[in-house]
Image (tube, rainbow, N blue to C red; front, side, top):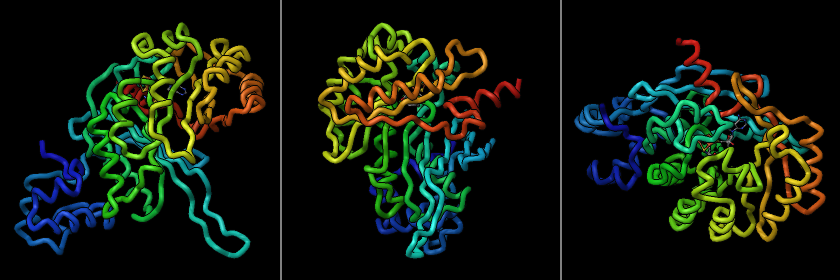
Length: 355
Ligand code: SAH
Ligand code: SF4
């Protein structure tokens, strides 16, 4: 199998192609002009184009399935070079509009990307976990998801977008490739997506939160907390036995955070499990002293899931409690709910169909 050229940072590529300004030209063909073959890279010598063609693949995935939601969310199922599949989602956060002064503002996009095929963490509420773990994604396969989404939606190369590492897999369990992908996204001569626009969501591998912090990449983190006591958290996220709540909170406190920003805590609300006000009260106490923002997520049920979606009343009461006690708190709007919203569901649907 050919190696993907998307696996290379610009400086790595410069070691391969001489003289080194060629790396800059190749980056521009890939990330600005969306070239779909090396042959199109006209300002490279023919011999170089041919040897690139022999050595590398360009975009190591293809669109297997695509679902459009009425709110503009588009969910993709991609096939990787070895036939494995992963999901990515393009979320339109805000429609394009023209303000009172007649200035046009473009739509805002966020891309939700996967970092692994499957996941080792094994959360009991998560569909991705059901299929077990297959393999890590390479940096190039992470980068390719965003590139493919931009190309498929005709998004200009300089269109600003945010990246959230919230698709399938645990990003910190694939830290090396994740860090490289973050670097490639950041490259000013590539996609130029600054680290401030990238958020790594983790189920709480505390030691890896520290490692990510030490790399000082400038990215944000989101913690999938979901529970306020270790007993319930260990039921939902078995790995919590090794990395308990206290260890996560300590790691968050050590993490280098832009002073203007907040750490996001995701709290998946499950009916009858963690949707009560006693939990809300404990959550306020737990996050005391942290510049935090809480994002409440409705549990999204799927066929055979043992948990249930909370009522809107309980959700709102939970949110009100947090807000009244000084915490910033939003409820994640169920984007794409009509197109199998939670991670892993599109993949699951299509593999059921194949049976
Ligand atoms: N592994 C990382 C990132 C991927 S999971 C993490 O756990 O943070 C991304 C998010 O999807 C997590 O916050 C997870 O809690 C949420 N999720 C998983 N299954 C879900 C479901 N059935 N309903 C709603 N959210 C779900
Ligand atoms: Fe893995 Fe995140 Fe799913 Fe847990 S919620 S199994 S960490 S992808």
